[in-house]
Amino acid sequence: MKTAICSGSFDPVTLGHVDIITRASALFDKIYAVVLNNPTKHTTFTLEERMEFLKLATSHLGNVEYDVHGGLLVDYVREKKATAIVRGLRAVSDFDYEFQTALINRKLYGGAETVFLMTQGEYLYLSSSIVKQVAMFGGDISQFIPAPIVDAVTERIRLQQGGMKL
Image (cartoon, rainbow, N blue to C red; front, top):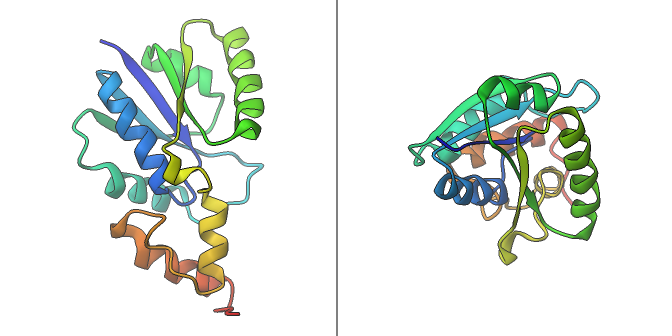
């Protein structure tokens, strides 16, 4: 069985994330969609919320399991006996970072390959940070994130930012 890990902070999950996970699920027998808990990263949503959003966004995929991890990704990959780490790429700047990470991961654990999937053109500009910024200023984020999470994401971000509008 070919197993892959699709990981990220998913703060919040975007349609770009969903696209990568969906396409990876067609390439591998099993996908672990893993919400990473990085203590150096300030997140807007709790681990539980991010996990719930991810489940709502990808529940249509029958070969996806969900988890949370707070350590080195390669330790998780080894534990799950995965053969690949799937990473989405939007631009050259993504590639620089992801390439370095892939090389480090290979040094730490050579038992899995990193597979890069290019995002669909319609998601090249899309990031969780952009989504949060648009919501913060009262913009419509429904075209950027899965429909089942739009209201919860919009409400949280506006509450945290004091309902700022331009």
